[in-house]
Structures are given as structure tokens and as C-alpha cells.
Length: 246
Image (cartoon, rainbow, N blue to C red; front, side, top):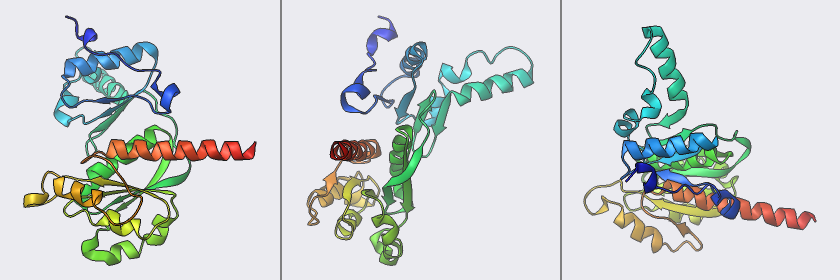
């Protein structure tokens, strides 16, 4: 069986739901990812890749093709050209293949990370929003262990109609933010923590049991899903505004 028979890309997804398909790279081989990228290249399409580990990224032919000939200067130039085809962020383990839309307009989404250890999940959300052309603001290391860090920035956060909050340990921050802002709050429990907190189940249970009403919860470490939830909210708001103007 050819590797091309192991996947079917959904290029019409954005027309149906307003969100493009993303390629979840965990569990996929470099050969499968290369074939997916080649299929996208054949259509002149761009792709968002998530959970692409650095080691797997370095094994992709998309980065190494046609760099074994010519002078050292020519090979370096070819490698730079190949790397440009895959905009990679090792912190979030995301990559953009091809051309992504330009980020325009004011930031409508605040991405709040309780601790620096939660930044990879926050960065994943930011990268997904940027791929969709949406500006967002990052507020990092504002967890409840030093509540003053949050209160000094809360007015900035309130200026955004949608707030994504990534938090591990006891995941108290989404509940606190949910009691302080009027916008939509999307909680992302993370797998950061010691002992029973490790793995993120304690954080997930905490945000599901939150007493702050109306908080949306996505799965553990799912910055991608949180960004998609934010995009659905923004799309819905845009449609409502367009209908009101008619």
C-alpha cells in the first residue's frame, strides 16, 4: 500500500465550518507527513501542522530535498529556501507550510498563561490564531501564586472579547479570570505540575468544576482546540454584526 493511501486531506473544511484542516503530526511518520505536504504543494495549498517534534521535523524531506549537490554556498542557500517553506516554532511544536494569511486588525483574543511552563500551550493557541489571520495578545506568568501579576494587567486582558487561559497545577486561574472579565473565557488545563497534578487531570477536573459561570473547557494541553473555539466565537460575532447592519 502506498503512503498516499493512508490519508485524505479535507480541503473543503474551511467552506463548511470556517476552519481549515490542521495536520496532527504525533503518531505520523516523517514519510506520511512528507506525502501530506507534497499533496498540499500539488494544490498550491498551505497547511498548519501541530505537535511536530523537532526530531521529526529534521527528518522531513521537505527540508532536505535537493541540498546534496553543488557548492557549500549553494547547499546553504537551498537549505534556507527549504526551511522557508516550513515556518517552524519549536516551543509550540507547530509549523506552517506555505503561505499563511497576513495577521490584520486589532487583537480580539487574549492568551493568558498562568506560568512560564504553560507558555508552549499558549504559543500553540497563538500560532493557530495567527495562521487564521487573527491578532492576539500574550499575557504570560500571571498565575494566582502571585495574584498581583494578574491584577496589574487585568484591564489589558479585559479589553479583549475572548480570553484563552492556559493553566496547570490546580488550574485556579481560569476561575479567577472568569470572575473578573465579561468576555468569553476558554480554559485550557495543562499537564504542568507535581504529583497528582502531573498529566493535567487535576487541572481538567478543576476547570470543569469551576464556580465561575460560562467558562468553556477544552482538553488537556489543547491550545489548538482553544484557538479554534475562539475563532468560532469571532466568526459568529462577525455574522451577527453583518446581519445587524443589513
